[in-house]
Amino acid sequence: MFLDQAKIHVKAGDGGNGAVAFRREKYIPFGGPSGGDGGHGGDVILWVDPRLNTLASFHHKSKFAAQRGENGHGKDMTGASGADLRIAVPPGTVVRDADTGLLVADLTAPGQELVVARGGRGGRGNTRFATSTNQAPRMAENGEPGGARTLLLELKLIADVGIVGLPNAGKSTLLAAVSAARPKIADYPFTTLEPYLGVASLDDDTTLVLADIPGLIEGAAQGAGLGYEFLRHIERTRILIHLLDGARQNPLADYDTINAELKAFGRGLDTKPQIVGFNKMDLPQAQEQWPQIKPALEQRGAEAIAISAVAKDGVRDLLYRAAQKLRELPPPEIEEPIPIITLTEEEPFTVERTADGWQVSGARIEKIMAMSRLDSYEALQHLQRKFERIGLIEALTAAGVQEGDTILIGDFEMEWHP
Picture 1 (cartoon, rainbow, N blue to C red):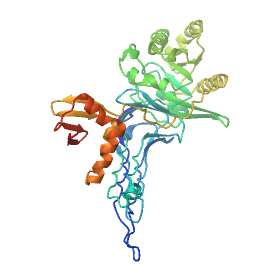
Picture 2: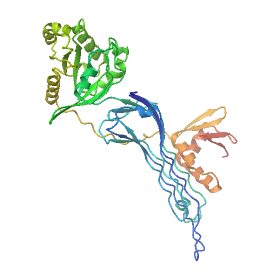
Picture 3: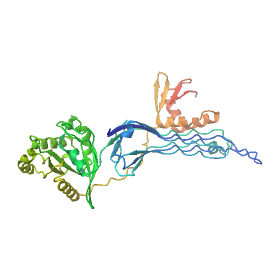
Picture 4: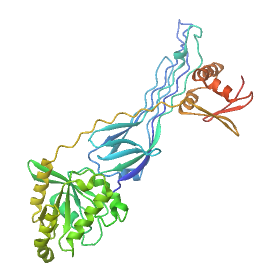
């Protein structure tokens, strides 16, 4: 099954926890702290694999998690970093944030990479907290939680030439005749359900990548039939081969219908250069209509070439003309490399009175709590100083917190004492 949309959830690796340890070596009676830091968590990376052409793999698996960092060890040994998780996507994958709908990246170049979730840094071991006044600290940090997000993936096929037309116009037959692609072909009056890519080698110096876009019907731009789902693929193509079924009763009306749908969809589809392929010249009906249809198309400003995709008559002329048009077009714009995603600055916390107590929310304050190890008086003092530095104590006091009130931060619950 061809899949051109998918939703995935990615989770970067958490950082490893820092260690609390002390040196125990012969002849060194007061070795001091030796707890190492935790290792960094692995990143989640999307990369473009040119061998892929669908998002089908995400139909079976949609949740991905990178490896967490190892915990620190004694003797100042840092834990190993977690391995990055690399997820392959096909060229032409558009990545959006599922929560905001904002564009994250447009991945088109083979080998292109994008970090979509950052691994958490490792927690500090007790060696890091040694000072001149506290030479034997018994506290360390937990690892930082890795980033997590839900992403929407959308595939837009990348091809030089898009083949468009009504169902049964012969698009799949044309693609099969000029390339190694093998779309499902039969004499039925409904559309192919999947877009296909094919490569046509005309000579040693001329190669075209063609996309067979499933047949459109009237109203496709408004969602009728399958047209809306696949019109997006035409955005990537540089020129269009507009295939007409020469054996139909009114090929000119078919031509106008498709162009109306391209214009209604927008995004510049109606301005792309076109060559009309008047197909099925192996049939008497097409042969009879061609002398009247050709001048009528030229009056509309269309360039038309008569072909038979089944008999392969006129097909090379059509493709060579498409290749010539491509050479006449200005080179495609090269987009700047996508920057690595960075989190924007945000308020460190918000304070809200609830029925259960005082709810303190915010990514920064929740990260501080997640990395705090509240297993010693020393660690609690350290957390108290952090609260004072970021202004939480002052904010709670100003909000009217009273002794004995409950303070809720993430999964943690504390009791307020001035």
